[in-house]
Image (cartoon, rainbow, N blue to C red; front, side):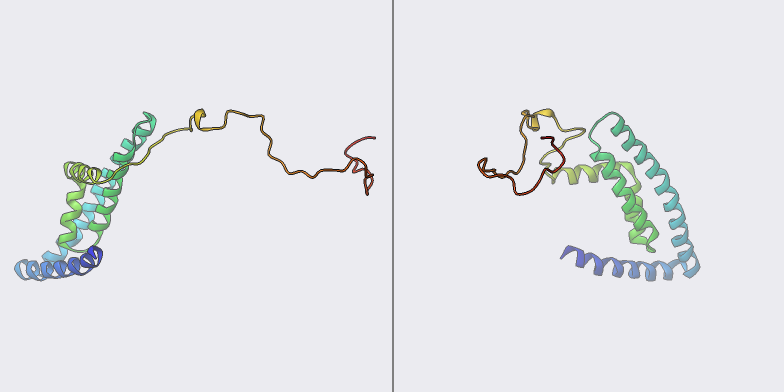
Length: 159
């Protein structure tokens, strides 16, 4: 339901903002602002994305929890999509997502509502595996020793 509401409300808000701002400052300044925010947003997304990737690499190198750098990277990706979408409302929200304190607050808000069931890094511990290595899983058929074989030697054994 919320997604449907967003798909209806966001375009209506964008159209209303285009009409109001376009009527206030004119057509060409409005279009210039839209193009300028797209270029500025692309530049900021590249810079913030590179920073998020370096933080993610650092968390992997230190073997620490990569959840926060991954969340920041996802929010930067969403910001890029919003900034490339023409409109003032989406641009405002996209620029907010590029602001690190806002991303940190959004991360804390989301993190408080998600319960992590388990988290592991690296190889599984040896305690989880079966310690008895002498078990052999096989299929077999019993051979009656009183009956002679119906076929000749397979060649794998010598008589």
